[in-house]
Image 1 (cartoon, rainbow, N blue to C red):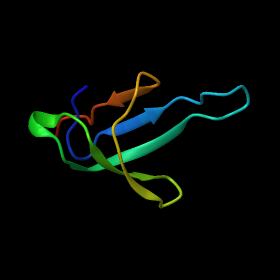
Image 2 (image 1 turned 180 degrees about the vertical axis):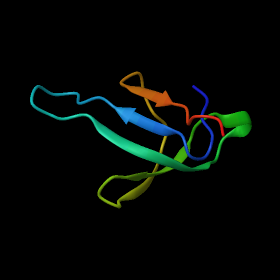
Image 3 (image 1 turned 120 degrees about the vertical axis):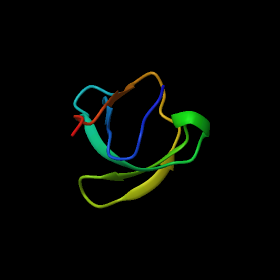
Length: 63
């Protein structure tokens, strides 16, 4: 998994009824775009995470 600042991280719910969550990558802490990432969720919560297989990086549009 590789991400850059400004990309969106989509974290799928792990339990029935749990909604997907999105977070903006605000800092890349690993080498060459690899985890861990500092992210900010839609509710303003910030955390450092190493996304698992239930997560997808959506790269920001160039320009």
